[in-house]
Image (cartoon, rainbow, N blue to C red; front, side, top):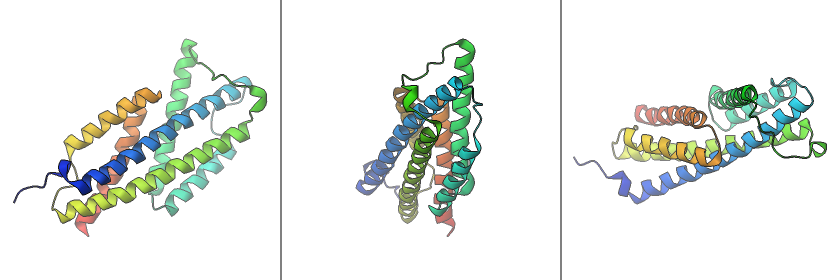
Length: 201
């Protein structure tokens, strides 16, 4: 039995294009999120406020995690994504602070407040959550299609290509490549679990 050539399969091309669009949206939202985080760090630094998450931010995180569960994302998955992003921001700040290279974004401190920036962060996190939920809907369709063709879920060559593309895109957007690779490896684990579940059921 010949294995179908998914690279030239119109339906697979269309579904992979959807995945690529969701990934692009995810990376652009992530880049904006990192920009907002730098503003928060700069403002906290100016006001001599601890950089750790405030109680208000922890409450926001709880809201986001609950929303991710409602969207059928695994509870610990989206928390893992947010923890990776938070740790990356703190690590980058610490490294830049040690070398004196931390560049606060140009902004009018009079027109900014931490609650407003926190609200922006919450909205961005919700948007990231929605994008991932939609992405996994397409992953499920891909899994069902592969199962109908008796094709295994993992395509190592395709995944490496996707990971390389995300690394290139993250560099252009000024996002840490290691952060993006960690996030997309976490996303890939969930995608494989979805496809494996389809094979079992």
